Length: 175
Image 1 (tube, one colour):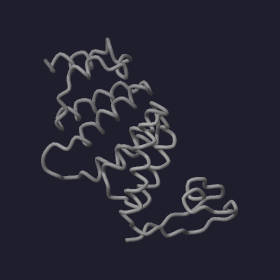
Image 2 (image 1 turned 120 degrees about the vertical axis):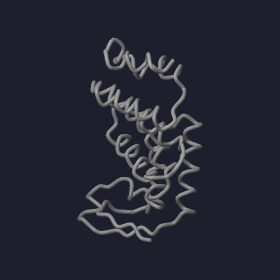
Image 3 (image 1 turned 180 degrees about the vertical axis):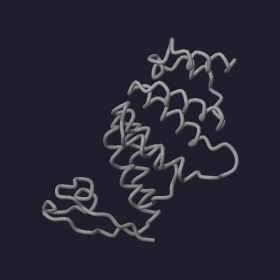
């Protein structure tokens, strides 16, 4: 399996990944082979950086892991979490959480990355002030297996929803 993408001028991620000596001056197609070993190496580097408090470095490593393995749910999930740590309203996080849900597809059972992805999307929407989408994704999270109700009730990501009729009614159903 090969991944094909276009390199735009000044693409720092690919410059760093392939150690380009010069900045990319024109659009070129770069083919990145599916390589789970390299993906795991970058993923492990990312998790190490998280423990060291370097979330931005971790986000870059998770992005590199995804370049080498576009089918790994955990890589996308951890990338999204790193992105929301950097920016609670991150569009990159939203994209990665959505990719988790796409990859999970019709898998049977409760996959924690699925219900936490809905939860993460709810937090993103709450931070953007979109209460309707926030509550809708919280409901999907619970339907997908999320059961940490006290965490939800006390999560500062959802303070902006307190007092909203739909949110308050939803919270009351979680007793």
